[in-house]
Image (cartoon, rainbow, N blue to C red; front, side, top):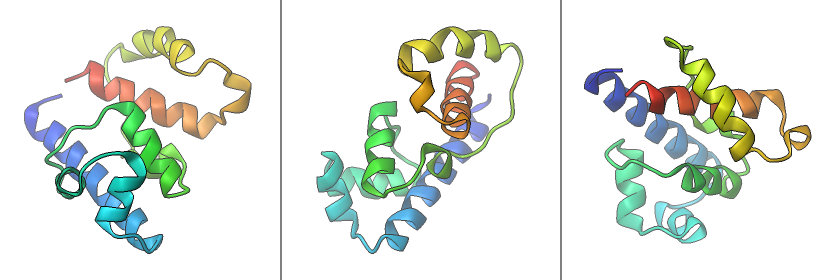
Length: 117
């Protein structure tokens, strides 16, 4: 993944978070407080200028009552990233029976993105 694609991914992530936040009727400050980041950080997230740890993305999704696959931008499988994802997902999702396939795919897509930077 080149730098332009990476920027586009985070830009789209920010749009998804902003749209979900507005639909929930929350301000940036309130959402920021709910997930433990500053309002300035949340502004930068929504502009696609701030990279987030996966646990913060999960907290945002939970605060907005959204599934991860509604927050993370969709991305197709690239190269051999499936092998890395297959090895990593069990470590991240310890009880796969409680995770639906769409959420699992959203996490897999996120790891594919990270592996193809």
